[in-house]
Figure 1 (cartoon, rainbow, N blue to C red):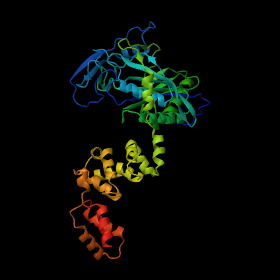
Figure 2: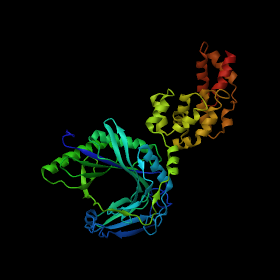
Figure 3: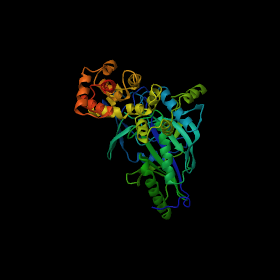
Figure 4: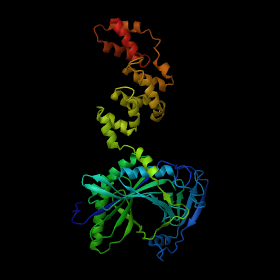
Length: 474
């Protein structure tokens, strides 16, 4: 599917929504998803009203024609705010700090005073009929090989309810997701090829993952706005995999070309499909869908808060990679430390012992191997062998234990032994065992004899005590 993107005047803009890993935005409810039976359900219907322009929004009118009842499943982790039966609480300061971090990382200008707004929502995904959103920053950028792409705005907003099912008469939603804090990052329409679009999405994703955001399927949603010369802007919503971006954009270009030929171009919102195509969802919402939230005061972002955020900016993965590579670690170990989020632990342990490879392996490979041998989940092993425990072990290297003993001591601790117990000398008569191996296998090196002894006792003895005995015997 070949297109001359410059000739057809292709313009692309991205909207990326990412859940933040905190409690909900305007109440104290936890941001957890539920798969059990709800406590009860409530029902609502859509009643469109005339907006500030004196007209009913076109998207609201379209949804009303479906004449559906919205059913909401309510859990004990929901409150009256999510049911729209109680005013919102003060904005979640932890979520705000995360968004301010992102604003700094994207080189944006932060609004010192800003107004929480209501964005009209007509598809039943909000019990109130609107989504609360607040503009936090604007006018930033990301770098791509093809030049800078502007970040138009960064907003903090509520996530929507989670759809469970739909038929001709009803739509059913869970209220577990409603109100989870989202950051919305909107680029300027300064992306001029699908490849550049993918690069921008990946760069934004890298910056997001440096901050305290949720991970996993469904925690990030990407929408792409596409237009070519002579056509109208189309928004394609809901694809999560950046790998599909190029195909999705190329397919939409072909569709818009056909619409131009048939004089059928429309401003519309479409849903992404797995094969890269899209389907019509609704008309593009009108310009008057935003209005002030009267139940929440103006948001004032102080210089003190911004300075606090600046002092605690996270490092990007690319920066962490450069940092780890300076220690001479191979690519595999660098990737493992980054993937498992162990960079800060690595920094801590590097102050204890000058052995980067041992530190990296203790944080990653050793723990995975021990989890497999002991039949325990890796998460459990990670919890037992945290940075404090590893620090205590590594402090003993060169004294009570050798580098080769670190993995053995770690394994003993996972089995339930204390650090002192794990480093105690074994009750095996090592001198007798070593002499036996030397007699039965004459002429081997110290390393070979050590391997034979360690292999026989498999973690019951420490390498340092075996080596001490070998030096005496040989």
